[in-house]
Image (cartoon, rainbow over all chains, first blue to last red; front, side, top):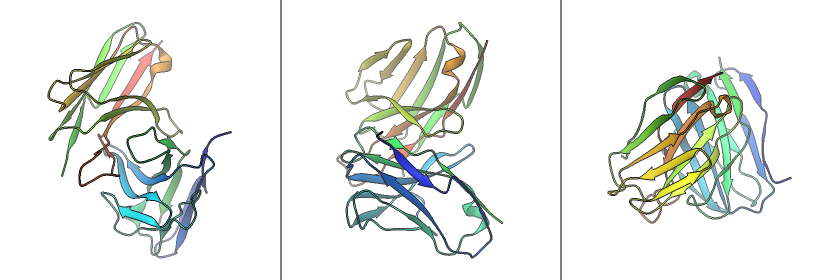
Length: 113
Length: 114
């Protein structure tokens, strides 16, 4: 089944404890992206990747890191999480670029205490 | 910085009613996508519109793209409880200096009561 998977789905952590949210797609898509969703703000793009080893900042990259060492995986890293990073996070992928249909993962709900 | 404004923010209607939600941009859209998100899930693409004045239909949903490509509307005829969800518009920023970025509006939360 074609899909985007994220792990974990739910995470409660404390300020300053490094964490990684994994994202994997099995559709051989070139483009991958991370978003955070907060009430009343819609989806805001954190980072995106046009292809392997190519990443770029979205609208809200502060406090996040990403890597794209292989095509199928695009992990989101929070080196020192803070409470303002409490949010619902979505990973998405598309065949090529952002003009194509983006397929979203199921989301990761992160709480930073 | 581009701003996408969606209205209304909340919409609560009865089954069978018609409704329209709007998406307006502070600048010209590259191309515009409409997504629907159901509770506990990620957004799912409904349609992409590219050309000014374009109209697309998807069963009971009608999407219009303004002639100047700065606004769009989604009209639902005879709404059903299954239409309940968050409706999001997004600009693909295709071909510009922000290629690769996707900018979303804040969304319209639609609730259709049986």
